[in-house]
Length: 572
Image (cartoon, rainbow, N blue to C red; front, side):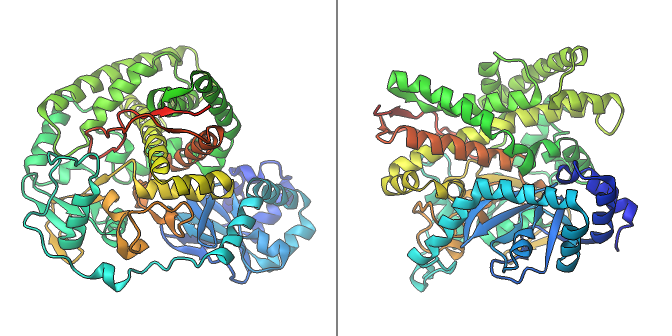
C-alpha cells in the first residue's frame, strides 16, 4: 500500500542523503517516491545489464553490489542505488542483491528526470553520492569488469566427478577430540556434508546442518527461533540452561538471543551506527590506526600478529564508537575469550566455570562504565543508548548491559579472527597473496573469499518452534539445530570442486554464510569488512617479504575459529 506524502517525507527527512535538501525540494521527492517495495534477503533488486528504468532510496536494510560477479561493496540505509544507469542513459552497471530484508522508496525513470529539472538540491545530493561512490570505487569497478575478459567466470555447478559419492565411512559426526580437528575441521565437516547433511548428534541431542542451501534456509526460516525456552530437554540444552541459571538472567537479553518483536526493538537502537554508510566514515581513522601500528612493527622487524595487530585494532575501534575508557583492553580480551567458549556444544566443565566468572566480572565492569557515563555523557554510542534508557524508550538497564557486552565482544572477536586466519591463508597461498598485492581492486572481493575459505564463525544455533523439514529430514518441535557455516562455505554444490582452494577473484565469494542470515544477519558485517580490507590490504603491501616464523596453531574453540598466535618475520 503506498505511503502518504507526509509519511514519505518524514521517512526521507531521517535519511542523511537528503539532510541538506530544501523543504520545497524534499516535498517534490516525497511526492515522486511514494511507491514502496520490499525485498527478502537474497532477492535481486536488479542485475548488471538490465535496462535502467528506476532507482531506489534504501530506507531499511543492506545490499551487496557486484560487478562481473565480484563483490565491490555494500549500500544500505540512507543511500540510493540505480541512479547511475539513469544519469548515463545506459544499462545497469552492477548487480544489487538484498543482504538483509530491504525496504526501498522507488523513483521511476520519468520521475527521476523531473527531479533533475525541478529539485536542484535533491539533484545535488544524488550527484554528490554518485561522485563519492565513483571516487571510492570507480577504478575498482573498471578493473573488476576487465577481469571478465581475462578469465571465464566460474559457473556455480559441480563437475560430475566431484559429485560422485565416496564410500560411506564407519563414523559420521563431529569429534573435536580427534587429532588435528582444530587445525583442520573441514575434513570432518565434508564427511557430514556428503554423507549425512542433516545429522543427529546423539551425544549432544542436537542436529547439524551442513549443506549450503540448507544452511541458508535455516537462517531465513521464520518457523525457527533463537530463544532457548522453546528447546526440548537434551544433553546440550540441560547444560546451557544450567549455565544461564548460574548467570542469573544475564546474557539472555542480547539481541542475537531474542526473537521479534524484541529483536527488532533492540537492534534498532544501534543499527544506524553500523550501516555501510556510517562505517565508511570510519575509514580515515582506521587507516591512520593501521599505519601507526605497522610503523611500530616495522621497527622490530618481526611480530606476533594476533596480539600486536589483529587484537588491538578492532578493539580500539569499537571502544571509540562506544565511548569506552582506554587502557582495559587486556581485561576485555580475557573475558571475551572465556565467554565465547560457552558458545561451543562440547564445552568442558573447566571452561564452563570460567565463562560464568568472566561474564560476571565483565558485567560488573560495564555497570561501572555505564554509571560513569551517566555522570559525563559524550557524543558516542553508549551515551546515546543511556539516553534511550533514561527516556524509557524501549531499553531497560539489564538490556543495556547485555547489548553493551554483545557489542564489545562481537565488535572485535570476528575481526581478530578474520585478520589472523586471512593472513595465514594468504601466506599459505603465495600466488594469491601476490595477485592481491599487485591489484588492490580485488581487496573487497578477497575479504569475502577469506571469510568463505576459513570463516571466523563456524556455527549458528536455531530451535524448531514447530515440526520442520530441512534437507528432507523431519525435525520435531523443540529440536536444537546448529547450522554449520564453515561446512556450507565449502560446499562444492555451490562453488565447484575447488572449494578447498583460496581464490581472491572468486566470483560469488560474497554469497558465503559467515555472517549468518535472515533477521539475525551480523549487525557488524560492514565494520568487519572494512577493518579486514584496510588491515590486510595495508599489511601485505607494507611488508611484501613477510613470511611465517613458525607454523601456528588454532585455538580449541569450535564456534569462533581463530589462531592462538601468528608469529611473522616482516622482511623489512
